[in-house]
Length: 374
Image (tube, rainbow, N blue to C red; front, side):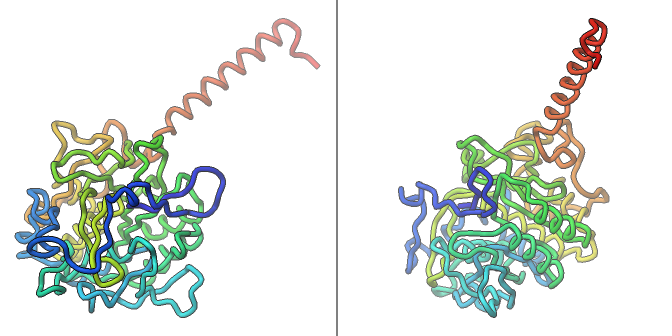
């Protein structure tokens, strides 16, 4: 599930509770409903791409802090107890620490648990995150299903200034708000990694998605348990990496669990993978951490990069067991993924050039014909 902006001139980012929610693709449960517990239902951790149990023999993310910019986080959930720092909120709640989550879909809580869930609930069979020793800095930017872009921008700046090295955002708008872009640039300048979901409107026109499309952001799309591209994911040359986004089990804000779909769930997996890499090599600059994830991702077919999988499905174990890359940042590929964040830029420039040439030709023709004089 992903919060998205409505098309048009609205400055408010609104959460879409998709029709699939009501069709039963997501269930919020007060008690476990999976044989063997929730951990057994967390299929992403056991895939060939993650192999989390092996990765954890190297590191579990100790010493890293990930900011979750969302609806807050239910810090008293048994799987999150002790994992959630006191944060703040930019959603008009006085004295807000971000350590609660009143959203209808438990959005922030579920994202936090995929990163740093401890699995301690239900006799140790609860949800465990990919980086279970990382800490969550909750920054509430959403209330009653709405996020003002200025709140998102302020949340990014707060996260940077309060010790988060990784910021994960499962918010999406089709409008490139200048305040949000400026905040992202601030984070990148300070050496942070910004991860963002690309969105769930792949079958609804596949519109641009911000902040995922901003230069320097790690844009994450989704796959299912068979490594197939999750079709609702928004795609394009801006995609950096892919991660699980379908049939995801996580914590809810009532002490229980939920199952859902969406690139909102893919982004925190990539953020957690970055935390594992940084935990092992804490002195690596952000650009080299990103490049380590890119260079060790499992490519889709023979392509170096494609619009659906980006540079591939993130592989935390391979990232931890491969020597650190000396390269930094995003590779230059044919589509120039990160230096041409907007797929329409080249087309727009071409249109402007052609139009200018055509106008110049017409004016010259009129002048020659004696019709261009005052």
